[in-house]
Length: 274
Image (cartoon, rainbow, N blue to C red):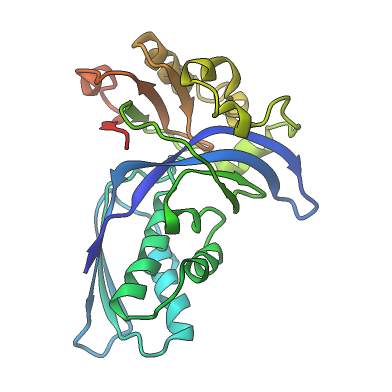
């Protein structure tokens, strides 16, 4: 059985306050995009718990820390009839990019195992399992645009469609530490909530829809800021860093030719939004 976990982008991101537990409350909009990994699971004939084969974009760390393995073990604790499985994952979504690729893989593993082993889990139950693996994992269970608050784990459905627009996604070969990005931000309540801004025409977003991480990341990595500027120079209606970076996206009314040449040396993809 095979499934295709997709990425997300953040439409705006306000860091509203630092919590007593050291985490930060925020508000953002998660929007799914058609950039996908591939995840295949088959039953193991041999007497093993699991095997994991990775291809595509390299992933650091051992298999025990991979979120798809953690998702498998989490469900197996409550459903012992889940057999040993052979997992093959092709990584196309870049890691450390603010695109939620690992979280998507975990959530889609939960959905896949639910179907394959007939666990009969309802959506709310799958979301509960996913939330135990990461703050934004549960988003990918329903995989629809949401207004996210808390630490990125409280979701309010929203009516938003960017169908008909084109997304240009660019990730330079730069690693941004999320911990350091948070440390350099100044939490504050926004004058206007993102939930209200995204209800306005997309042409108005440029002046109102902000990602607070840009203020801490751009001075450290001017190359990332330059990508955003370039996307606007190319005619983007709206451009932003996603999450804490390092990927940057631009939303366009029309397909843009030769984007690979413009951003040579970077991971670059163009997709029609759905």
